[in-house]
Image (cartoon, rainbow, N blue to C red; front, side):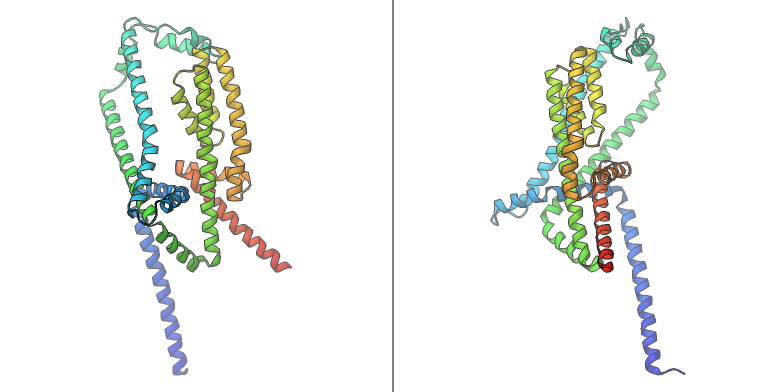
Length: 364
């Protein structure tokens, strides 16, 4: 028989081990259940977190300038409303512009339905695709009654189903946007407390390297914001000015499309190419060549000099890993992945550098 004291110690160790396993299982179960419950809102919460991190330096300066005498709810409420206005105003403007264009197009189609639409001369002059586009137009739109044939091909029930699905999707997006703004408000209001809690938790979980990883990921979000969003807005403004000067139709809409496409590396070329084709069809080849040449210069400078320096200097990543993080993140998480991808890659690279430094130190 063993000693009583030793048996008691073994029993306590076994109990402690079982309690640890049970605690880990309970934590894993709670995390899985919580993730399942909020799975439909993770994108909204992620956007709120990204916006809070990206705008926190501006918010902190604004709150400090207001002083302690200002109401506690005023700074977070003002910044949240400002974010909502900045996001909603362009969407509302583009929606109104698109609705006006749709009404004009519908009226034009109704007026021309009785006689058909002749092939536009500018369409046939388009480079490469002109003959094919002119042939398609002549086969489908040049004869009378084409609108009736198109209406007969569309099922009324399918149109109603599409409208209901579109309305439900818009309502769901509106709810997600409202949740994201509400979460952003609470993050602004309780930002200091959240940061303090995250520091304590990261130190307990990862030790001293936890805060280093968090700082690296935050720097990555700031760098991605500057390198993607701000540079994309600059590209949109520069190209929008070119669209206006060359009298390309809908220059503001095309500029917004270019800015949106420029957030994804190398995607701005497609928007600029579309604008060049539209300019060739309406204004001639000279404006199209100007747009294509100016667009090549803008995209080349932004993608090869400005963007790599802004993102790479902040994340301390080679541009190839930044690019893989952006493309892989966008493929996995849509637009939110543009920020998540580089942040994850920055954290992994930080861990790798720490590991390789430790190995080199042990060899020395």
